[in-house]
Length: 437
Image (cartoon, rainbow, N blue to C red):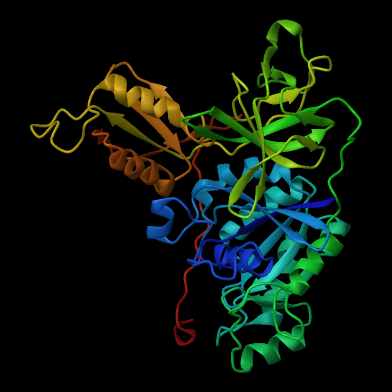
């Protein structure tokens, strides 16, 4: 079976998760009588409450005889660590851009990461049915952004798709998009493939035609980079990533290579383990798999000592892949034991040991986070990518029953080579009425 691996990246609130919902529906993932909810990929309670994607997630659909692995990524810069680690699993990206707002700061951030990895972009100008849509202008703004980010010739030849994720249709023709967006909406309510009805077929066809199949030697020794982790109380830690080379079967012994420089690894550094379970992603499910080959995005269970960035290989080859580079934190805050008179009233985990264990356990999944111990055994310095990154961690821990107090956030400054002090900066977009400009 042919495979295409694609990540969906966008600025927050540009309709990414809604579009992925429609892709799942129109690929026949759900039964005709199945009750559907909006934003099915946002499974975390905080994601559904805030209307944003926090954790990257894997799914897959079948379009004809091709399996399309889709990686849904966060749209906020604070969760850029989630984006950076999953881009290594794909050959191309769907860049979603709002038809009225155009490219935004997060669009620039994630697009730059994708271009540096040599990924091919497919630009999806979404929400074309907005009354204030600027399709032609946004098209030109995206091309200017690609040139500004030093895209190569292949990347500059990006395909453009005009879509309405809410209505569930797409087209590659600008004139047709303008006509459809102005016409009365024809909502799609059935499941399956449509003939003669507006749908997402042009988007699927663009993915199949534009993106190359995964490159990787299926006959070579097994090699896989762990891009993300999950946990099951029944089978333990689950390693998720793309098979870069060779194949792996349930029961195979694999070498576990820790983080380090790419290339051959000394036998003393190598851990050995066995694959107990193997899963593939289909729709919202993980299905048991007996064998995975080069290009497949899969989950392996039972492998001990695995971390994000770990390389899994054939026991005889022991060749490490290049690790995952993540932007450094920009903000830090102190987490400490609650020593107020009201201590113990709002949580059940209140000791420094419990707080320490929970914070360091977060490092197993949260690649962009840093946790450091301080001179005080009751205080830990936590550094993240921004306010939202840190507050999501605080709220998650609070709901889990942890009680703690936090300090005022501090900007992390760095020293340049000449000794001058550097601070992180952000780009800000401010919308004002035209008459005020």
